[in-house]
Image (tube, rainbow, N blue to C red; front, side):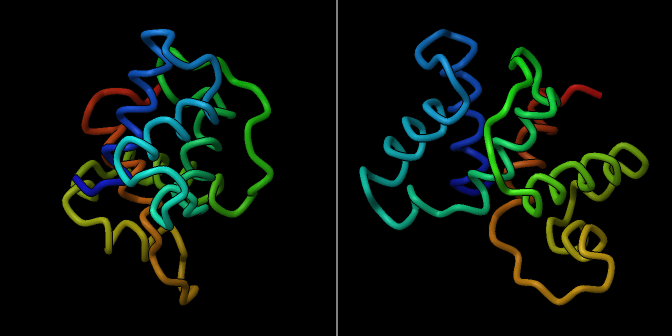
Length: 128
């Protein structure tokens, strides 16, 4: 699991334990703890938007759906990844292959979005 997967798990823990009252606050606190306040790692948008998009759709156990992100692309990548994993759990073995399937032929660099999804899935935090 990469650092953004760890950030997603920490953020969910913050929400479940009421340390944070919103997914955005939880993500900010988790990434501050992992990467340092104001660091490039903390402000990186793609994994954050993927996490917030999954929260927004009510796809993370114990997190109330709501409006948390404006990013349609990264939210969509996360949702599609969950759909693909649901049909073929062996995709959890390779975020690169999962990413290729999510993109369906587009050539876009992976930016830790799949790390967020697979870490949540492997820790049984995705609503299936």
